[in-house]
Image: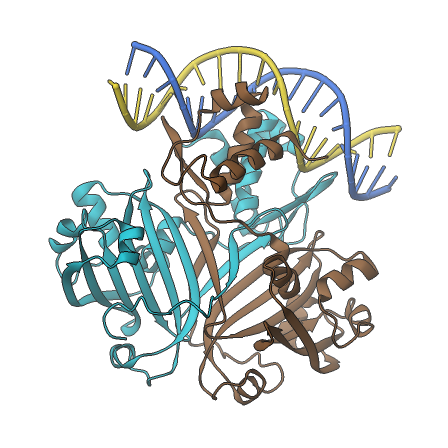
Length: 255
Length: 255
DNA sequence: TAGTGGTCTAGACCACGGA
DNA sequence: CCGTGGTCTAGACCACTAT
């Protein structure tokens, strides 16, 4: 059963997307929404907070809330998992394991994932039949057996791990930058060496904060972009200078 | 005067960063925090919601909150403005206008920024003395005069517009991908043509939803990365497939 | 000045997790 | 089972915007 505030949020979101509340217009006041839905003002505030977090509406003290955009918002799962994202977007997609092996964790990996024998997997993903993504993933020792049990063409590893072991990836940290394609990247993606790739490095943990995987994903330029909406008072994304003194090493496989 | 919940949030954040609540440990219960700060539970919940939005803590119904990370969180202004970001990070930075001209808005720009004569500005930004960023910005007609009044080496346009005209950029939409350096990019950044750049396209609006500017910013690879923390139930960032049918045009200047 | 959102309180009940 | 966070209510006062 969905919460009251979610129903109200859904109602407002639908109004925004349908054009009942066009971009640039004002939302009804909290008092009015409360009356209309027979809910307390606090509940209404929870609802509009959801929309504000999605970047659909803005607010200032003393003035009505304003509609900022009508984009559909996507879920954590869709950022975390290529398959879940592609499926939600109605894309045709596929994937194949190219290489897979166990090896001892490096010291950096021990710090991120815990020690022991990690599992290193190289996957190639396609979108609309075209190769668009090279995924180099390192799984923590404790999930390695479950991953090894999966077929090489498993569509969604995240989904499979949930189905097989009840494993939920709940938190992620992502670092996004651009890199030149290495020889292996170039071969797999069908681009020239040195051509631009969009890189997403991520580390994922469970609800309890237990590290699951760490991945280096490289998208062919022009295939995928990341989109963020933000506002004063909300800090979803952060820019980082790269420390040129630190070894950029951390290479997984050859690339 | 800071709000009560912000003081509580600051207190908790400090505890996390200082190590009093190490990564992986549990936060005190809401009831305990309420008692400790002499506040109502609702106020405490507002405080921990702030930390959750920053990605520092996670939560599950029935279990204590868990500390996920200890990274310093940055503000909207730091994502929006290169100068404010660089200053906050303690970096040495600079900037220079390379080219500036008025021209009629294209149809796409009219839709995004409103019509009239827009102002197109090409800037080169440096970090630690190195050129790292080429900014191609189009300002809406209504802000163009204020921008034209600024000196060519103005450090922070955002700050200057606020000081001069009380203009506040409150909302932003950002699209992040990778592109190959064009001839002009390569010359300005001192890289080879075709080498990878991290591109951030953004559109900014005021509190009222009035469009201010639209920009195409390109970072030299290896100089800057974007970082996101997210969790189930929070949707700061979204991945988008790029529509290959649409003209990738929208070129501003030669690039 | 009237309306609006921002903050805060003091309760209540429920769903879930862990012992 | 108890403790925890998730939801919800019904009020209150304040700061700010718009008129």
